[in-house]
Image (cartoon, rainbow, N blue to C red):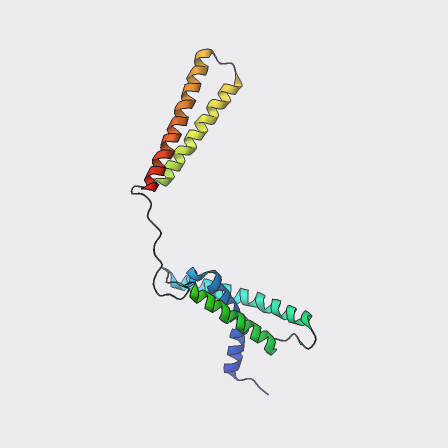
Length: 176
């Protein structure tokens, strides 16, 4: 009693592709949407689907084997195939609801304020923090005259004011 090639291909797909494809669509619907590099996205989805399918199929097999007598722990057991098929179809349904199969590209995220210089701002914050730490170490170290100490404290207050001003300006830019 041989198995037809079509039945063998369908069985392999149900065991080794469909459950993972369904879970991938449900958990990562953005991987199914049109992308700049469709070939790479397709390879990633197929690889993830096969790995997840193998894991799920083995897990279902173990659960069925410990659940009760009568399970032979073979790949062709109809209960295992039905569990994999059900999980795959449910995952594809959830993925469809979450937009995995839409043809339109999702809306782009809102733009940041015009002329956004995020990295430069971050570097400025870091530079100010370093300067303030240096001043604090000098003040703690002692050995300073009253004039030097007053100059360092004045510089520390200027740094704090500059940092606060920068923070308020960025918050205003994002609020508008």
